[in-house]
Image (cartoon, rainbow, N blue to C red):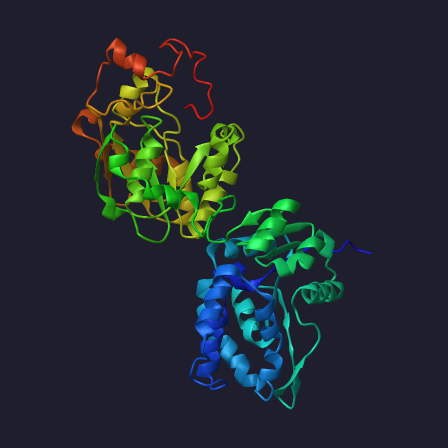
Length: 475
């Protein structure tokens, strides 16, 4: 007997969708003339409560009685309402859910929507999203109309697990080797039955269960590993604190913000002069009000505390020694989900005399990513960050409140790329960055011994590498 394959089972409300599908489905049913035009008193409050805390036992009791309420409805009319609802709901499916569906299918797994919602109302949405099948509550039918009964399992709690097992037996799927994604504590029976349980946007009780059982938690509107507290990811919370008055030891001179798109994907590229550069970019993006995903060296992610923070911010780990294409694929996924991704093409802060070279030399990662995704590349020229945090220093100079250095940030228009040669496009990117720097950056400069020392890692000399630059995250 051939080994049975695994599958991935996805809940719908508060999992694939940010909230409930009910308002859109209800509107579609009203438009089809199935239910009265007037809203039921308290209807919107019920949906709002569901969006906030998830399923409750009373709400599921009402859902169970929906089959009786549907008695006499023509099935064909409800199916048409489902198609109308699918057109709207498909746009509301969270971006990283779509990527995960594609990933499972690329790995050869069946991808199945498993939801309590009525089959005829959600099947069109599942088809639009490319699901292989749907496990949902089916209403009994007589002469083309619902008869007020449930045909088979009520797909909720233990009933959902039973329905999944029936489907798996019919399709040669091993539930115990499969994946399941849900927001609800009432799906614990299904989550407990699979090898890979993931709590997605978990309700309060499921959050506790997931922590006790060490199930990962995820939100499909942000990259994997990015937590959310009260619906807010850490980076957005920190952006609220990115106020000049809270950082009196540095002055920020930022222009060109309008070139950064307020929605949709883009690759932000910056020149690298200091450990303060990511913070300067962070201050800049905070003015746009969007999160930013940085590509960073593996040493940052491996460091205690710092690594967890980098992951929580949605950082993308890069291990330059392996030559793996995984970081670019992860960055491409983030861009496909509509995110902003930041790369510093130089890779590291230039050392010693190279720091003063007016010609910027870059690696091809940003150009390759642009060729893969065809999204705009926005250059950001940074100048003066080395005065805030010299490479020689272990920490930024937070005591310079009396005479704070000025960090100059200039955002330029998208770089015109040809996508024919990574080397040629990298040169175009670096030239665009140079054009955003002040005139002094384009002049050759013979550094003084003091300037040269500040441009070297701690413990290093111009002639040798030195031992002082091995701290996590050092460039």
